[in-house]
Length: 266
Image 1 (cartoon, rainbow, N blue to C red):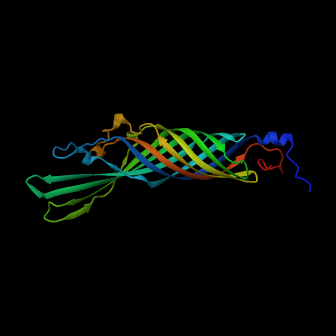
Image 2 (image 1 turned 90 degrees about the vertical axis):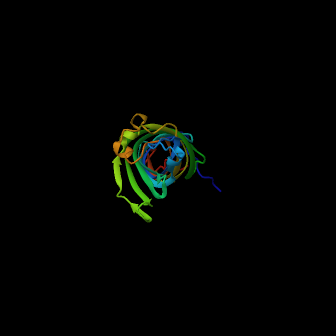
Image 3 (image 1 turned 45 degrees about the horizontal axis):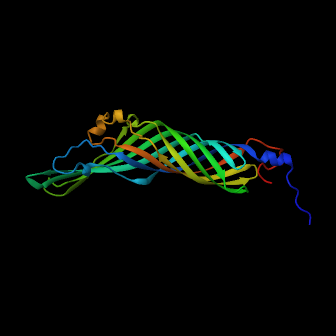
């Protein structure tokens, strides 16, 4: 039985390196990791910690869109992936006021806050292909610098009033505040897993990455600078931002041997 012809030296050498250009898009989940808590209130008859914010982790979905330029050489890839990322995270805090002479006269307030932040990410990744077939799982690590584009904060106030002769629950209209001045650029480390599928001369990509924030995203100089937020007892904590990002996309090779040669099929 005749064996299949092997690629010639030119093809083998050609397949050792390749440039890929393409586009990816997907969703992300964020976690605000507390570094140091701050509060406007200074209670005298209970612990200040009761006024600290409670952060929700990986609850709100955001989105991102990525352009990718990757250089592949013998199973290792070096990749630049500029990304526009829209991130959301939430937290809440509660306050309680009580008449010391009549504890039935009590007011409880809860502030639910949703933070929306837009970043331009500039990552550099190193990838390693664990297999070199049509279906190629890979691992990647990288470093990312995130440039702040915009930020908004939405606040909903609800509460229970026991001081009006009964139990009166209420919700005030929501407040949306521009909050770009409360944040700043930051950097993070990333690691992830992915899967490439070579469909002819096109590569289909599915990947998931975890971004570990390494610096404070809060602008400490402007912490108390927003009067509208300070007026509703909100002040920005020192936090780091962690994210899970899931993306899918397509990549196109920039080098061909000939019009009928598959760039990766041996």
